[in-house]
Length: 51
Image 1 (cartoon, one colour):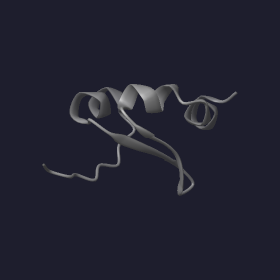
Image 2: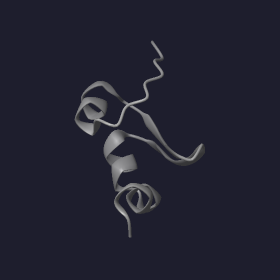
Image 3: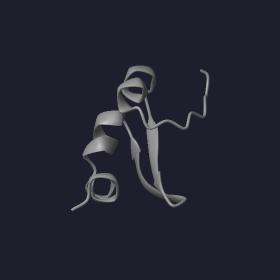
């Protein structure tokens, strides 16, 4: 397989090209896994959308 490091905020693009993602907030890993799982993770939602 091929590994690519992509730093991107366009989640439509991320969902289209990624099998696995890692969400970071100030250098700390919030969640990792399939794009849909990461987007739904409570820590990711709180960090990027507010509580």
